[in-house]
Image (cartoon, rainbow, N blue to C red; front, side, top):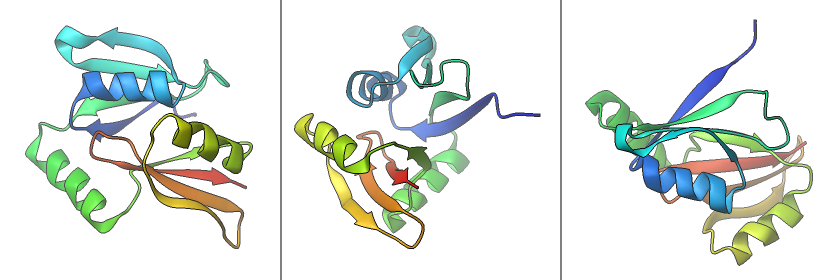
Length: 125
């Protein structure tokens, strides 16, 4: 058994698709803007786990997403090879970071705002 698809609830799936592909560098697997459906994959593992950018119009999902954001908790974690290099690339692209790359007991982490109501944690282990 493996993870085929997971989702992150976003304020606007069209805006999220643009951010996740144009800024973060994910690739389109499926994009149907009229249906508010966007699925992206990592160019490093295009056959790996896909990410559904799901509208948070369900009240339960909306409350959950907003609660995570208010508490500063990332909705999803992405692994990177070189966190400092990725931080600098994203910062040049105008990405706002809640936490710059910081050494932890298990590696390095940084937290960014996806502009769609979520924080994303980047990790380098």
